[in-house]
Image 1 (cartoon, rainbow, N blue to C red):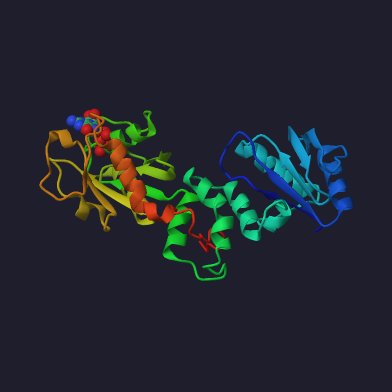
Image 2: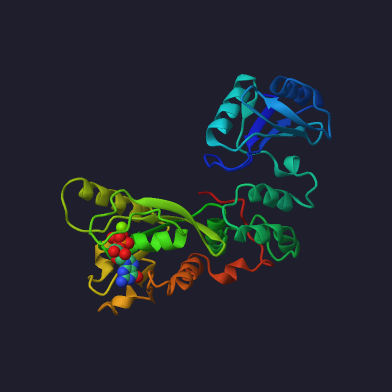
Length: 321
Ligand SMILES: Nc1nc2c(ncn2[C@@H]2O[C@H](COP(=O)(O)OP(=O)(O)O)[C@@H](O)[C@H]2O)c(=O)[nH]1
Ligand SMILES: [Mg+2]
């Protein structure tokens, strides 16, 4: 196939705008494809407001003979419909385009890849680090083909939000904690065990690291729909990248309940007193005490601050996961 398209903004996530790269093997092929997609010719260097394959009105930019970008609205359905329409116009959908093709202005292959990765990175902390990679690798201490390090792998959390699961007994303040972090009422909090059924998830920015935060129903022996919700919560705990076991003064040690070794053990509702089990952090969410310190602690546990050293080369492109 002579003309290919690649979505260069995150798939399946709505945003204001999306960007689709169109890459061709020759000038004629791209001109022809743009005429089919936009219903008009677009010259190199031209920015055109165009009908995008009858799906949306948006911007088309022709960067060079063989590279153009379509910028439709970023709704998931619009993007899906446009990609499908491109296929029916004979354009092949691909996952990877050589980074230098899309960012010919980059000073190196690594800088071009970093600019590509910026388009899909989920965390603000990724920005400075990615922009520093051209210089970091230029220092010559590390070979770009060298094996991935543990730090390389941990830093991938900046590109794709890791799953953080909060689990523990009912009625200890788990949902209140999520609401405090989100700054709004996402999860129903009530002084009644069993209030949270389906787990509630949200993207939460922990001081520059965006995570997928999951609030789960309290783990206890019950029957009916609640027990099914708890079974789902257990699957989520298994799948988590980071598990936070929580309890309070009147609850038992949450560790055995959670069923796997948690990454952090936290005492919630700490105004009610200190629990008889060991925790590494105490938070009084309703009084606002310890919440932001707790958020920073979770961030630092997932991504130790030393990992963010901008001068150190990070292999952000060879992730096999
Ligand atoms: N005293 C006190 N109560 C809290 C605190 N956080 C939450 N609660 C209350 O504890 C009850 C249970 O909270 P909820 O978030 O629904 O707990 P969950 O079942 O673990 O999700 C609610 O009445 C909350 O208002 C806190 O820091 N201190
Ligand atoms: Mg709850």
